[in-house]
Length: 79
Image (cartoon, helix red, strand yellow):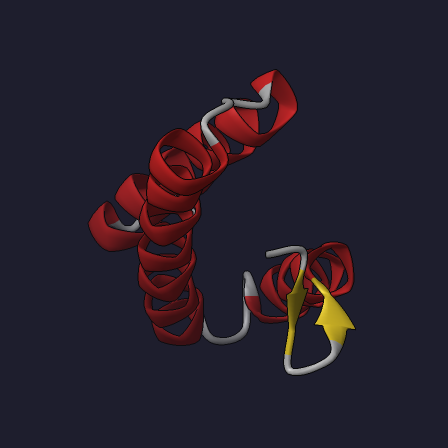
């Protein structure tokens, strides 16, 4: 569960946050859309962690919270 399309999840995450930084001021609608995708990914990873793996990683939980907050702020125009 640590890979997606043959690429580690950490690489996908780094790519996501780089995109957020690049698009933050120029294209807020892209940030809003990306943040929704990140929250959906966080929900699925939380489900896998809690049910399939049976353990919750504190760092992962913090990341899920960050993704949720970024999504909320992006949707209301605060990012």
